[in-house]
Image (tube, rainbow, N blue to C red; front, side):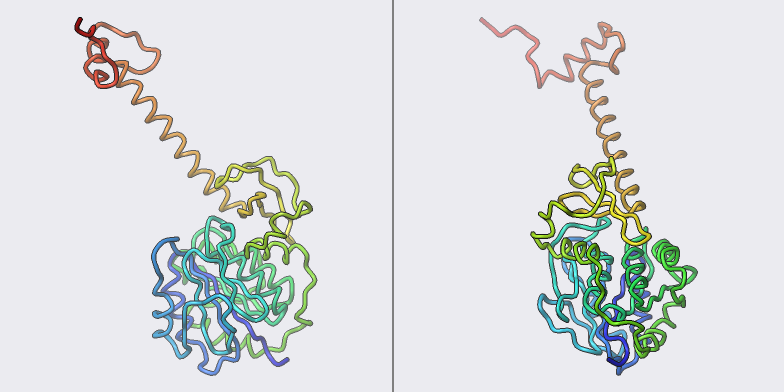
Length: 317
């Protein structure tokens, strides 16, 4: 096999500008398929494929389930679907969210390793939090090539910094220089046989693809973490993937420590606001905050405010 056959790219906030710059610099005769995940909202449609199609020399289309991966073609994940690689074809699924996203970057990166091993180039661009860091570490662990947009060049550097923390040896460059660099990495001969034996990586990828055998496997990896899933309230299990610690519930939702903390903070804030609203409603109906004396004025106010809910006057005979 000559060169690497698969390029996987992940981006989030600020990623459209970065993707356009990367695609603009890709070689027109790139001998590898390019798969792209950009975090998007579940509803609606995406025009990212048409943007990238106009941005550079390679054709870009929205990925369809079962589409054959062709060299020199860009495949973009549609909203609300994980994009993975299965038997050299695109696989779309509505598997459990990872790091609060669907599509997520980590499932794509893991599936690329499962399919092509060291013949993979993984690229992380601008974005918030750390989706893609665990997937990029899996690519590096199996001798694939890794590249990260320079944090100084990214509109939102968090994902780039997390990726570099996970893979310190990754090549870094500004977005406009990553395109030619990807061409050079694709041209390199892979170091090892592209057939990794990694049960955890295989099972984690199968869960994202909504494989019911993997989801229902009673021997799934992980130890009880003593934490609850913010999406379904189920118990979370700590999964050690190489040097990376992650969490997954039995429903299938997966979290990095940073994304879990972010979602838990949002859940706590929501609960506090609901508690405050409940106290305010109660105060309106009692004429004051709880545990405060109810004076005659407050009792009169209570009758006026809550008159629609209760009948205070005796009904006529």
